[in-house]
Image (cartoon, rainbow, N blue to C red; front, side, top):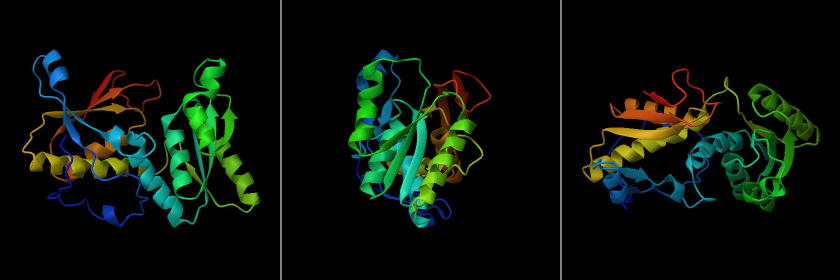
Length: 250
């Protein structure tokens, strides 16, 4: 694994001046994938191990939460609200982050999958949400981003009336994409690792749903002078890209 702290690439503008709640444990490693490379016909494949961040099972949403929760703390919020699917990794990570930062967390679980079984509704991330002390709410629609955000606003208003200071991590478009900033940081990390280990990549492939990971990585690379291709695989009917339901290359 290639994971040494190293920095030759400058930061992007005033990125380091923005409020950020530090959750990522150092630089995530680049790991060579020789077996997969062989299966894929000899392409030299690497994985940037954002699953190994050392925080609540990792994943790309940890980077995004750093900037949402950084803003929340700068606004003196003490309660986080977020909405997502019943087994959402994002809401589970938000609950963990709120716990770490001494904040309350209210999770709204949306009915995106037609499943009624007990295991789906009580195991996995739902079990962890409860273990982490989150208050769980439900929303009956699964593909209604605007409605889900509006319902979060109603819960936030109730919490405000109780004297709490809520902060909403929004689902729908039309809000500042603070989560994308986490992958502007990741772009800098990646370019530093490429310099350190003398690696030249032809392209980067990422999952693309909300567009925060895809857009943030692309912006960061271009802002730092890199023309590295960013290829996104759309994994959800809710993915915000007008091009293709399978692939978007930027």
